[in-house]
Image (cartoon, rainbow, N blue to C red; front, side, top):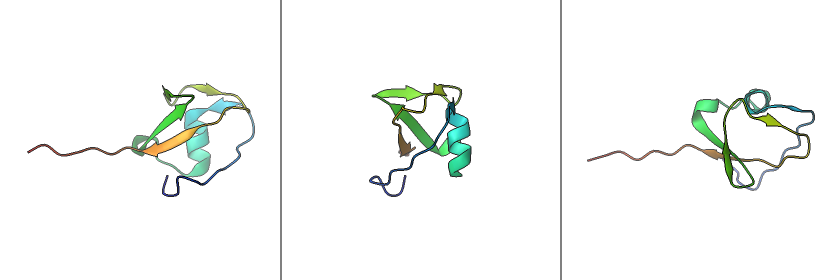
Length: 62
């Protein structure tokens, strides 16, 4: 996200899309990573999971 050092705690078992919705993040604009693995919106998360949320960056062709 904008501040890569920002940490948030989100309680409860839920799916990636539900966490992003709670944070007000459009799932089409980010990649969600857990332990080096790219997750889908439907991936189920446990309360102890630590996620990294990175903005999607695309480059243009010439």
